[in-house]
Image 1 (cartoon, rainbow, N blue to C red):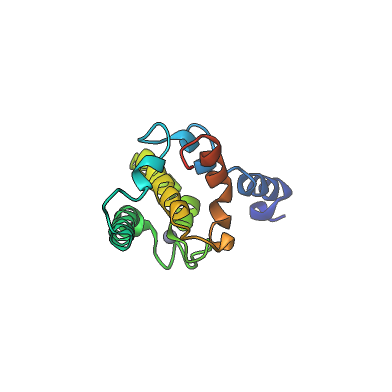
Image 2: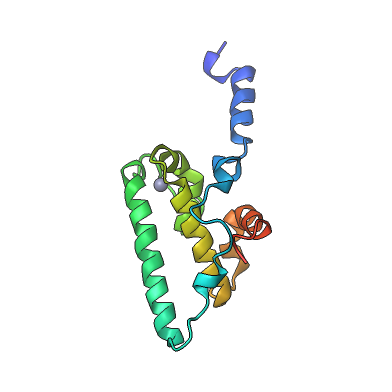
Length: 151
Ligand SMILES: [Zn+2]
């Protein structure tokens, strides 16, 4: 009898893999620095050139996302993460593979807020026209849309 591959172990492994991801579960799905929508802060301000607005914001999103990735990079090694199985989408990779580290560092409010801000900005300027890019986090996006964080 192989104790490591018993039916009970297989069943508990299956149950674990079928569990809802933490980032989609209360209270973490509601963690946010901001109550309400990001709509007001993503619209093009009066008298600001749209190209400059896009460039500054994309640069800032890149920097902030890079900072979050920097907090989990010690855990994102070729051994621990041989593939970025959520695709080349850094938000999705962090949500699916490093969310526990985000929670341990108590960054979930900041990370969810950055994500909602990013998606709001991308929607405002039609920057993510390929729906496949949003697919891994579609449920989170829909939840945030229904709660009014993303408009
Ligand atoms: Zn990783």
